[in-house]
Length: 402
Image (cartoon, rainbow, N blue to C red):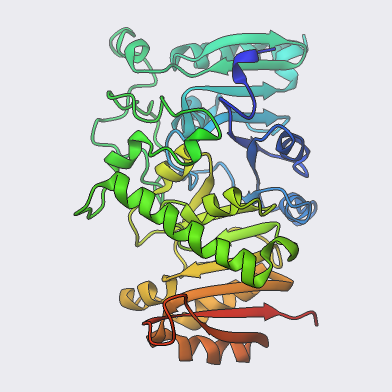
């Protein structure tokens, strides 16, 4: 219908809303597209649990009163097939959240009854959707059968050319579209950066290692060049993962659902891709760290904001590998939550037979070992490549089958 979507090249990261058992995302894996499938927690259907058991990226999330935990311009394509969301209610506040997360020039795909049925109430819904998308400057590029596809503009020119007092209004210039932790939805159109940041990412797979423009807009203490930091992190994790693959036989350990609990720029996930470990990685950026999520998504990876003092939005026993580098020493400095609380949450998320790799300072290792033993993990404390006198150690643990 729209060849410009170019799955696996121009379109690398998609969001599937109300995903069923994630068959859409599973199919797009064949097209080199990573699709994050989201659905509400549902005690009857447990859609997300099924999706994760299939090895497809998924997490529990719901459109309600707060922003979803993804940055602005995260997704190249957002898909809603019979997702049972009334996009036009409350002056279109939910479609405005979709608009915030959709990359400039990205596509929104809606497969629903109002698109193709001729009943009066459904036609009225279609007219309301057409009116709303026109007012937020989306272009209807194709309507065929039961599918309608819109494209978001590449810049602010359409927004600025609207009549005075047009609804919905543009968000204030001081609104941070990447601030998502416990932030309420906004009834306004998210402005696109005037410098084009986010709109001009390179095609996959080049974008995985190309320092994106939004690297420059992250609030962070960078005494060195940000591009150099980005490249150094990639090199660092590539060397480490190469040694893990060689020494610990990671390619043969059936890792599929992987989480990096303190992701930085996503170098760990990029290294797994480069070394052909057949998995997907949920890159978690702790709320206490610099918000690097825009960079992670611009690289063609997926991730989410989270506070490790709270439970993560997934079902129990859904991850094969949990990776935490420097997480516990960082959380100790916050003095906000106990190390044991984080370890118990890891145990909840980790499937029986799953593995934990903790790379952290010696100062936290004895406490971690004690908790791991109490959790009935089988652990080994190892030296890093820097040798036995280094200030960091690696704690590897297996959650044995009951």
